[in-house]
Image 1 (tube, rainbow, N blue to C red):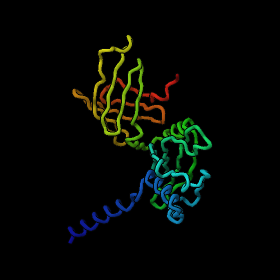
Image 2 (image 1 turned 180 degrees about the vertical axis):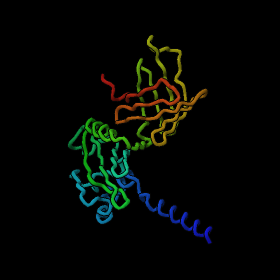
Image 3 (image 1 turned 30 degrees about the vertical axis):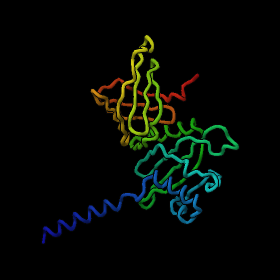
Image 4 (image 1 turned 135 degrees about the vertical axis):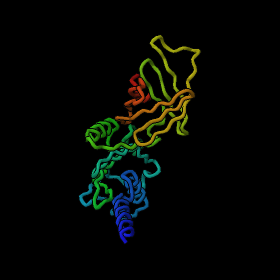
Length: 238
């Protein structure tokens, strides 16, 4: 009898722990809201909002094809607050030539993530917003693979290219300038949470991402790698 009681108690504990997990991550709530609004499912969208929610986007989502263009790159979360930031893109091409960033602040209410605020801003302001959120000591950062795809630069004009298919190349340039005989070194890569793994033919590097925005990524290298950060090639000054 005692054995069955212990099993029952253990089962209840596991059930409680599972029930406490939110059904959707902040990123998933963010995407689901825009999908619901695009389909004019106002009742579904309303359930994804916090009681004190404010939507300051001021746009007709179903007419702007936003869900198809929206790519949530970064998710920052603590135990009860979260910030989801999307890839910059031109929201209203007929009005603005510059890219904007759509973001959402979320709260955990009754065990589920709910949108507290929706807004848009410039990529520069979004960087400040992300930097401010990362000040929280218990913040958890989750980065999508697509957020790292592209060409990155680091000193001496060295560069790293990360491709969507998980492959990449790196060209190391020394202080003397580029060597015309040197070919880029190939590698494979993946990111999980904040860990970026680079696997070369003769070695593997594990980099912990400490901060990131749309222009720069910084690392902490547990395996004593000399890497400290990269800047997006397209964001370098002319």
